[in-house]
Image (cartoon, rainbow, N blue to C red; front, side):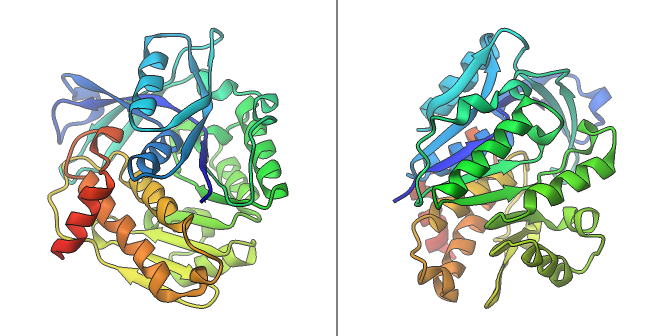
Length: 319
């Protein structure tokens, strides 16, 4: 079976001690390891998949905490680099009553933006592998070029690419540049994971099927659309499937989409080319990821709330 590589940011999320208040009014925060690609690698590793994180943190206590957290989750950190040129990025988060979030990033620049393309040259990508990335590190930076080179190399090896735009508007002065960048990096990606809230901005339409067709026209082979408490859908060139989320009490949605992505990739990487054309096999991938996400939102933090394989299987068996 192949390896899941997640490239991009590893950062510290500061989770509020009080819900339902604006970020400026939060009285205190709890530290939690985060960053969408790091979260995805951790989610996959905690489910038993071979997963590596590719990125950069600062030579500071937060960087050490991130490395230890990833290693404790089972993630290979051979390609986690440290720099003294910038600090580890911090993200302060506020939570609304429904568990949705508001972010403030301390990243001007952050260490995650300094990963040099030369550092991805020795990664032994193979045709069984999948490279996952998001848009946070696609701002103009060294790391953007590292992403482009990693994508080029894994495609040359015959591997697959998964893109989750994971839009963070406050990191971009020009939202058109964000949209253009998403479209540029969507070109030729094999798997697209997008939330229903992101569709209209990216595709200029609120119609899900129209948006998915546009992604197919760009070369995507499979599109997952996450919908929060309403579950998720998957689209291929041959069929589409829906899965409702089990009813749970959402405490913190931080990392829920990353749990979905990591869980989905942990199941998807095990499918043969024939199974990728089988609605039952793909439907099981979708259901597994939806239920894993439903577990994660019931606890605070991202990596800390991600389930192991036994938890997901037990939850699936209850339904």
